[in-house]
Length: 215
Image 1 (cartoon, rainbow, N blue to C red):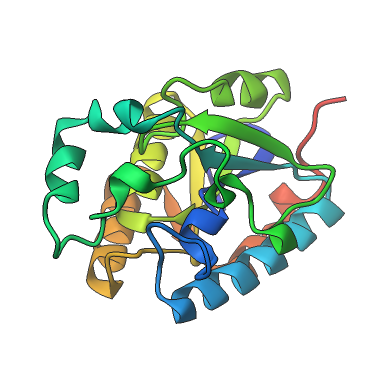
Image 2: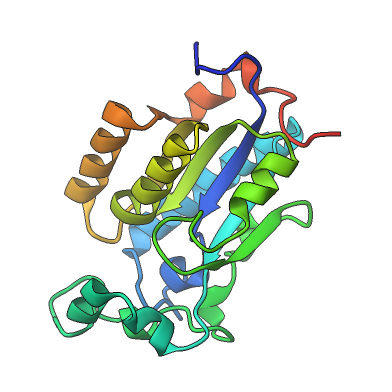
């Protein structure tokens, strides 16, 4: 399959697979329990395979110093004021030091990278993600995580305009905003920004095997 690069050098960009979304005991902006269970299992399967073939896993974790860093976004203020909004708890979401700012333990390996300065939907904005990717020779991103229609979509768009090849693992992404917006996010991605395929298909791509960290 042609991904538009001469030689694939891949890394996983795992977006917000943290307790703030996926651990129902502490999550401030939770998915449903069923979504969390399915997403965790799918990502663990993909990550274990990627590590076995030398593809690094880079976790993106949203974290804020204080509420002011959240309130700087005008639209987010309106979500906090709408009791019916799925994101009504945004002003309490992933403040540094809270339990939400940690990757789900079953998805984290000592060999993984963590970028924990993410503050907006776009994982590149204000973080050193691009530096980590370029310094390891990565040109192809395997994107996973939540939410499909916000952080996954924004990061895929940002990666595309930075000339990365992008593959979104569709069984490894989902949304707290429901199945329709999850599907809409994937439709936008496959139309203009990157490839969408499930883990089984990803694991059959010979070009990915052995790609990953630069020597």
